[in-house]
Length: 296
Ligand SMILES: [Zn+2]
Image 1 (cartoon, rainbow, N blue to C red):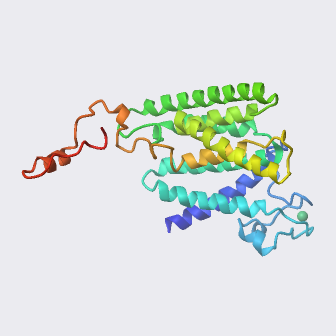
Image 2: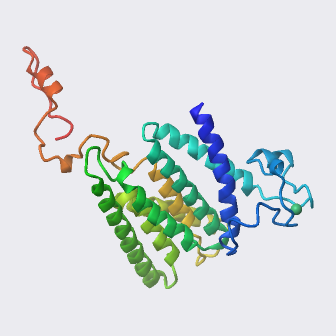
Image 3: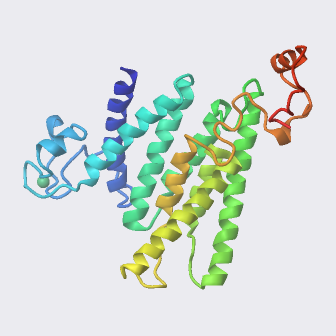
């Protein structure tokens, strides 16, 4: 039931994201006018504006002018709905964090579609993501271990954003020297800072690393199919955004959340201490000595 509710909520949020994807790069207002056909500009009735279903019902055509409506609309709505349901399944016990993660994951999705189509990442989106990441950092289980003081989350969020910005900026500078062209744009650097505000320094690093890997594979595939030249460029934002969304589920390589009550070995001040249960079990007579605990 809750999964269905989050799916429905996600599809409506996806409908709003479609408005962002269409209007932000065109610098139109996102509130007025209301939803309308991008071709004939006729306003949409509410029954033609139902997420996913309306597009299927109208078979991808506008009721007024009969023009083709992009499949991107139901696709974004369905993807957002699935994302909401999946995040619900991932974070059933932290509703506040889950809500924030849903909102942010949707915005990252919008960034991906806008950058893929227009080769720009609107500052509105990356800055909103950055500030939102700072704002919810006290509830962010990636950045703040349970029982840690709230400012721990904020500090790690700020550090993650700084790290993302610096590393992105460094990669952009080095890339420009090596390839003699823009390897990574300013929009990508700002996006990476926003990713760091949500996933910390590790999240930003993961997004950059995994994003580069898949981006390079995609580039090679395009070159082999002769769809771009050897010097051609592909937008990097969609790959960074995919990494950012993946961060909400899992951080490489330590799992997610990095601190779900366990301490990382390198951070454990008390490395030789064993959990008391294991100590009891090992103390029983007739047992061979316990192996060193996995934390060692
Ligand atoms: Zn129309």
